Image (cartoon, rainbow, N blue to C red):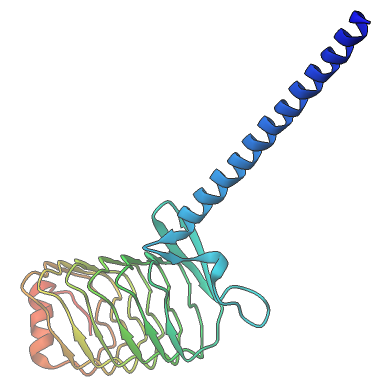
Length: 238
């Protein structure tokens, strides 16, 4: 009788131990899942703004603002919408290479103060784009970013930008007014190439280098501006 009680007691103990182990393992798994979920949520939030998963989607089910997150950096990889007025989400820090490449619909783009960098060809050949303000937060604009924006008429370069990159505004044939900050140092080759309507542009004394063909085809420049450019680069072509 005593042996039977011991056997029953042993079985009960083993059952209890197994149940405890299963609960512990399940709790760890759930804890890991919760931790991973919280980490993902933290990564998706920049300044309290959800990126990626909560974005609006186009008719094909693709996010309108396709982004890539790396730590605190949120890069807009591609705009997949067809709106005439576009407001880039706050929290985006980089507008990536060719993000708006050849978008023929967009007329106006609002860039948030969170953006620090506009990469190569970001808005290339956006032929209808005519309203764009670059916020003071931007400190780098790469080559060809606005090339071929044939409807763009005026632009103001932020104070933090010290270099206007190669072909930045090439073939912006309607571009008439450009405001350059007082600490700009360099205007590279082809920056304003074939901007045939360019009339008003200030060349601050801070500019030390202008590429030979930075202003080629700028047939509307005044003699005063051409003289200022030639003082910096005697080989400058118009």
